[in-house]
Image (cartoon, rainbow, N blue to C red; front, top):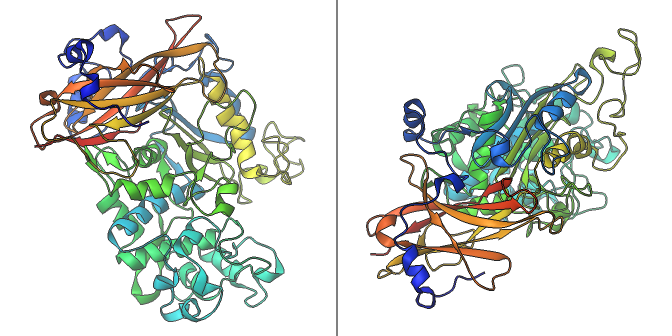
Length: 578
């Protein structure tokens, strides 16, 4: 919705709002006031996760309350059973950790590394190293051993975006189709052996050289970009493109350009000794992450690169990587965007009555056991990290059996599918997400008092928020800065038992905790409900100064008004005109 003109809104009520200074603190569900000195010290040096009770953020922690059918404690009790092999669970809402079982301890992230290390470094390559999604991947893959990328179909047609969306047609090393190994019968085995990197598999036996020179294209029946096939090999090629274009390893790019104060590092990403004597990384697995650190990467992506009142690479590149529509149709149909999986096809909210997260939810899962997912419209992030076993996947029994499996240890029969664990047969469609969804994501949605509101900033200083602008400029003579946000209450499950209560607007400068600037006034006749705050320009800061704003949309129960659910929006940056 385009914000209304400033002149038409300077009513007596609006003018009064310009002078807002005192607010009802008891009604605020935003950042906590007056943190302890130790917390203040942490905040002033960069972002740090806050902490809050689940109930303060609209979730049931240990006791059922209005509308909840599960609690976070009961979810943990279920999935921490040995047969489910859950080792970590973290739930974050509105920048506050509300439930944490092991989130400060490093643990394997498996293919979730694609979203935590692969995607952000791709953003940097797009921003600073001349990589375009529609560019031929051959621009960076055709040197030396990769000569066929410059001369031979279909390699010449494969784009960077096709590698990033798993639509390139490059076979995965686990693809058993004869056409994937008809020319180089041992390449898949060699790729799998070399994927951990290290000095045992140096050039020319490293995965990048195998992928560029030996990996095959699934040429039956599709041309590049027409069929989705999840491919670790394709993602390794994407990693090569990024590092070739930038001349730095993924770990170096991440630590120098992506990581911000309050964000952690991946632990021990694979080191690949490749051509040219370089030591590069691959992000298809291997590295370990602390759950909270991985969640911080998703926070950066969900906020479109805005962190501590600055842009970590331009907004438009983060938008290109995290969007859920507008990419290659074959990927969109499979619930995939650029690197990230997403909820555009309801793959994570398919169960009736469990659609409390939005279609904007995105992230990455790994090894059938791990999920790092975030929803920008409800301000929610969920991390679940699961145990791997000797056979290489967490959905099979460990060494034949585990307590709780069919049979008696140590002689029980090894499992061959998910049926004893997630309750999903291996043959079922989307089996990689059904188990974690039904055991983790569906229950987390049941733990809300009622579905959280969807919160979106729509106006920033007389500009419509477009998800691609880095900094919105106000008119030079504006007496006020108009902030507009919309709240959608239970838009995916009907009206439910809640209504919009209020929209709060916060300013963050990166020098301390966010400041509550005021409560918005409803815009008459707006649908969905929109609220606006006209902020006196001098409260923003001096002319030419830039500040970050976000909205907190709060819904309340129509049965018990004390039950409220807040949701933070994505932020916007605004420069006061001079």
